[in-house]
Image (cartoon, rainbow, N blue to C red; front, side, top):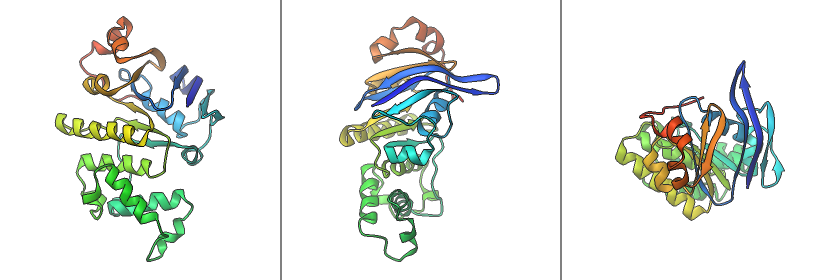
Length: 251
C-alpha cells in the first residue's frame, strides 16, 4: 500500500532521515521504534506532508505523493494523529468531529447554519462511538481527560475516512492502565475498520504485544525490519535500543 524509497530529510547539516526505504503492506499493524533522535516523527511528517523530503519517493496505492501538502495526502487516504492532541478546545467532541467531516466533504460553510447537512452529525456520532467517546459527545473538548483528548485526536483523523492511519505516540503521557486501555481501542479500531496502521511507541510491552511487524530507525536510517520475534532477537537492535532503559521522543 505504502512504498517508500530513498527518503531523505536534512535540517541544516543534520540528516534526520537518510535514504530510508521500506514498504507497509495493506492491512498490517506496524510499530516504528528507535532511540531518541532516531527520526521517527520526522519520518511520519514526511509521509503525511508536514515536511517535504530532500530526496526519495513516497508512493501510496501506486500514486507518487512525494511533496504533496497535508490536505492532498489526507484526500488520498492517509490520516495522522499527533503526540499532542490537536482540536478546538472551545467546541464539544461532536462539534469538533462535525467540523472535520464537513471540511473534508467540502461542506465547511454548512456549519454556519443551524442544521448541518444531513449525515454530518450522524457520521460524527458514529466516529465518536468507534473510539468510545459517545458519552462525551456533548462535553467541551478542553474538559476531557488527557486520554480522551488523545482519543478525540484519533477520532478526528478517522473522521476523514483514511485507509491508512499514522499514530504518533498514542499512549504518551498516560499511566500503565490507561496506556493499555488506549492501545486496546487502537487495536480494535484496526481490526474492525480494516485499516493499515503504523504507530510510534516507546512502550516495548505494547510494541511486542500487538504489532504484526516492527521497523527500527536509528540515527535516521533503517536499522532493522521484521516480526516481533525477529526484532527482539536482533543483536543490533538490542545494542542500539532495547538494551537501554529509556527512549524518549525524537525529532
